Image (cartoon, rainbow over all chains, first blue to last red; front, side):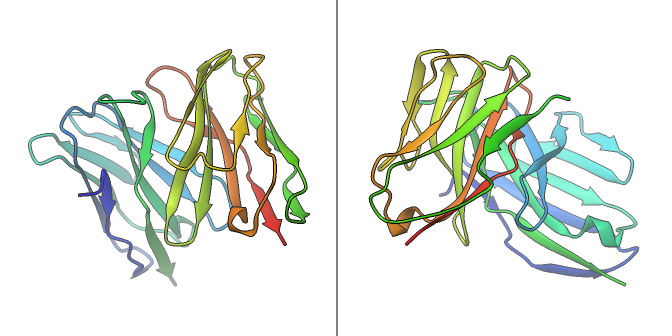
Length: 113
Length: 111
C-alpha cells in the first residue's frame, strides 16, 4: 500500500458545485497533515493544515479521521480559479527520515463555466 | 518577503556536463529539501537536510549531490547529468510542524 493515496481524477465540475477530495495514508503514526494546491507548471502552495477537530477556511473545509486514516478536503461553491491539482500531504513521524513530508500524487480539478 | 529562491528557472544542458541548481531561503528554516516532479509519478524527494552540515538521502538520490554549508543555502549538484534526469525540480524549506514553502521550480532538460 502506498504511503499516501489519492484519486487522480480529473474531476470536471461546473461553477458553484461542491467538490470533495479524499486521501488515505498508510501509517497510523503520522501526526501532521496538509492540503497543497498546485497550478500547472507552478510550485505547490500550502492551502491548509488539517487538524483532528476539522477546520474551515472560507469555502474550504478539511477533515481528518484518524481511525480510518483518511483525510478529506471539501470545496463549496467552486470557482473557475479553483482549477488546479490538489495534493494530500502527510508528515512522516515513523521509521527513518522522520519529519519528511510525503506527497500524494494529487487530484486534478477542472471547474467549468 | 519570505521566500525560497531557486535558480535557474530553465536549463538545457548536454549529457555529462556538471551543473548546479541553487536554492536559498530567507526564513531561517532548519529543514530544506529537494524534490523532482515527473508526470504520473508525483513529487519525489531527492535529498533533505535537517540543519547545517546534516544531509540525508530521500527516495531518489542516485545521480545527485547536495551540500548545506550555511543555513540559508542548499544547492543541488548533478555531477554527470543524464537524460533521465530531465524533470521539474523544486527546492523547499520548512520549520517545525509547518508545511513547506517551495521555490518556483527549475525545469531541466538534459539532451
